[in-house]
Image (cartoon, rainbow, N blue to C red; front, side, top):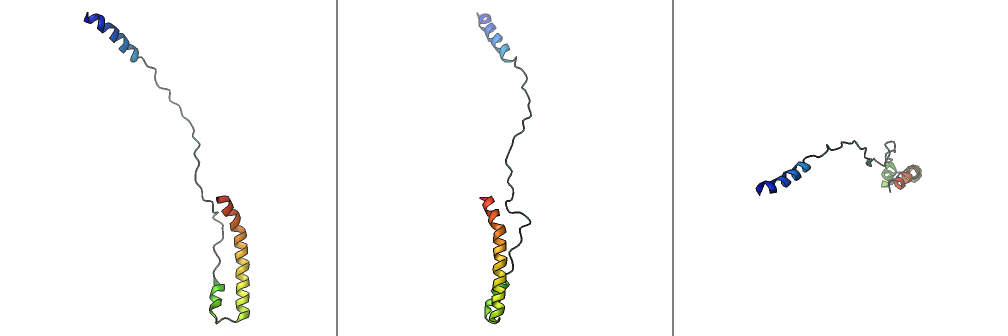
Length: 89
């Protein structure tokens, strides 16, 4: 009787061990890579020499000239920075 019960169990166990080898595949995965959105050639912030001229000891015409120059530099820098900021958003 035990032999009759053992035979089907052995047959089923033999089927479970007859597995095929796993298939090994190499798959390329596209992963987004973070990059800096501020370019390296972006000029540094201009010096605040116009602020130093506002201490009251600088003559008015010199203060006006320094302030106007600083304003032009600020506008030029903003013209380069705005597209960079828009690209980072």
